[in-house]
Length: 84
Ligand SMILES: [Cu+2]
Image: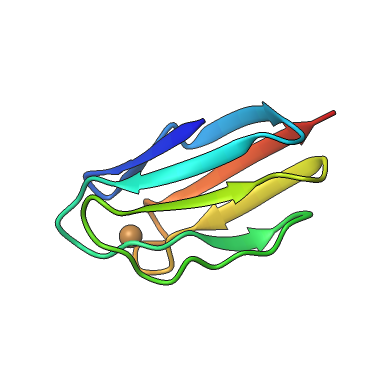
């Protein structure tokens, strides 16, 4: 699954995937973004990355992951529901 960071928003910002899926974020904006877990079964923090760069995780446990870009937390927060 691919998630776009586009115009300081997340597309799509809600996603349902199966355990074992790989999720990749791509930054299409000319500013730095990051992917940082806020709650849920997986902890991750990409660090800032620029336009054209990506970050990938594999979801290995079921549950609901909330994450955000800490640079733009008001408009860039998302949810991934991971199901068996
Ligand atoms: Cu951002």
